[in-house]
Image 1 (cartoon, rainbow, N blue to C red):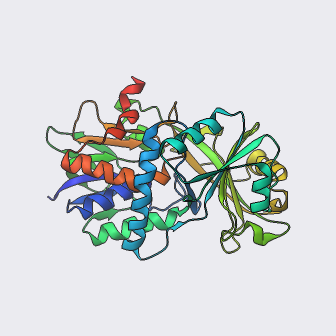
Image 2: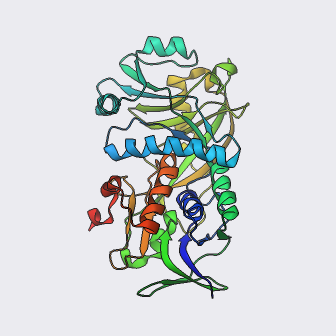
Image 3: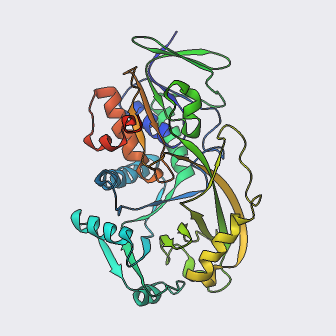
Length: 377
């Protein structure tokens, strides 16, 4: 029987990234997934994700973003395709918000190339915007949009080229922990690995029930709208990605790519669901599109046109909305990366490489400390 250096359960965002970096390092890697990523049963579909640097919280996030930016550029070279679109990202917050002050402070601390803009300046630069007075903009020139599904495909293809083995539609039924290895069983076979990495998103708790991982599945609608006037001003050539914090919610969005429409999602709130069951489709809840229209009416009235399509993804959310990246408290050869709480994709290249170095070379990165599992116990 083949003994793999690492078995990865969950070949979506973080699993695919870690598998790529591990296989590139020469490790023998087996990736197992209950579905066939990229798919619509987790947190990674919907075509695009924002990439930005400015965080008001843990410094670790900015370190991750700076590292991830370099790795996304390197992945584009390795894959031979564009994966990162530098549209810029505009953060819109009330002037009095602690988020505004925190982001601006961190931008100065890390010498990030940002611009602080008034409502008048934003409306002049991006005619599609209508910005209420009392708001301030923080524009990140180096921010942009990541093609999330294309990235996962690239990670997969490159991993396989590096010698990794990928088994899709292979849900894990049992894990047996041994002193020097693990045995992972699916419906059809049993696999042995010297180490195990669990990156199964909302299903992580089901796979490791003994840990009672504090990760809940949250239903998150997203929608694409066709601008009803001046469509060109919302095109990715001219319009940035954005985050908008309002009194009725925290929203994010993307410009239109080749007529795709303006994509909108909401970060806060959401309906807690059973991640093991099919998720209620877009449109099955009255608020699925209404809250997005409310945002567009206030900030981008020219974009509030025809609903082109909608979809639903899942957040894997922890109580504090920070990640879990740690070793199993009883089995040091078992590692966990989950709970990315709707803001992990931008860091995936950096986290995949960092976890790879930790597992293969015992190199622990100090920026992992805020994401210890022990904070919940």
